[in-house]
Amino acid sequence: MSIDKHHTIFIGNTAVGAEHPPFIIAELSGNHNQQIDLALAMVDAAAAAGAHAIKLQTFTADSMTLDVNSADFVIQEKNNLWHGASLHGLYAKAATPYEWHSVLFERAKAQGMLAFSSPFDASAVDFLAELDVPCYKIASFELTDIPLITKAASMGKPLIMSTGMASLSEIELAVNTAKSAGCQDIILLKCTSTYPAQPSNTNLFTLPHLREAFNCQVGLSDHTAGVGVSVASVALGANVIEKHFVLDRQAGGVDAAFSLEPAEFKMLVDETERAWQALGEVKYGGSDVEQESKQYRRSIYACENIQAGELFTEQNLRVVRPAFGLAPKYWQAVQGKHAKQDIPKGTALNWTHVDYS
Image 1 (cartoon, one colour):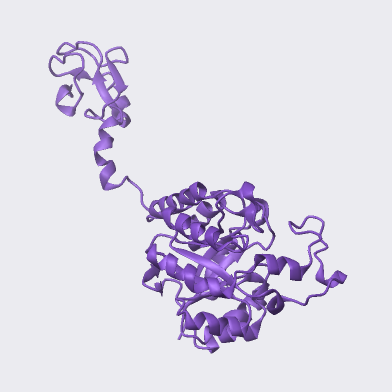
Image 2 (tube, helix red, strand yellow):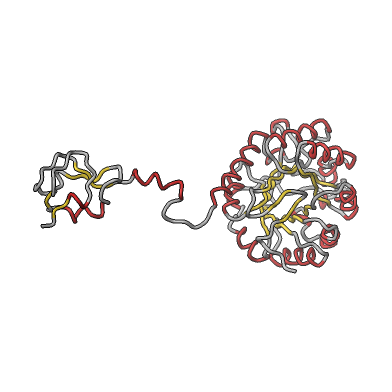
């Protein structure tokens, strides 16, 4: 069975695909700052902003890395948002406690949203299965974790995978692994794995190529500022948009620098849906609702009182709005012809006014 890029995928009861508005995911990440009240407030705010789903990340610091402070385990890149932080310390700060998951998922459900997570090891997949998540998300850095993909893909739910810096062959291996494990409902998210990402290195033209290469639905995991990149992605075929979410960037949070606040997130939801509505089809000649507007094109009118037998000239005819007279393309055809009858100023010229004798 092949994956069909036009196939509608159901995440829970929500249809995802080209025939439906973009599916918008609010990634809570670690922006809750280890405060459950703040996390719950984020869920409520995401719902109010129109998000279709919230997403968590299911890991512990120990499941992600080792508690070692050698150079290998400290972020060295000078331009990295978390430069100098130890991996274990960063993940401890960013982790969402396992005991919060059911509470946050229930809150999301009560607000009419879906809720799921990115598992980072096999035990996290099993934990999320117990919570009956509607799908699984593989983070970009885990796209090469073939055992994890096999585990998540075997659970009988749709699988969303961020591609990040993966090569075509790495994406192919991940997709084939998921299919071999029984998952056919696969969505690939174009993702630039820098935090924050710049529009200039987002390369949205990859989206249609990704869709054609793997014959599946595509979307965007967007780490840029603002909503412009996400809106543009819809025009290139993105059916899913994932954005990090925060109540107040100034209040901090591990991902706050590249997260959207509630008002911005509502704009994301609204503007991506507008972009989707605008796609339509290849069409010329105006839509049905435009037909009445054609009267505001130009046509040939008498701009002076014209006597029967008088010549039509540039002095007594003009091309003006509206379009109830002869079309402008007939301008030269009527010049020098005689008026067949008296024509008052303001009359729309038609062929009955023209004497050919």
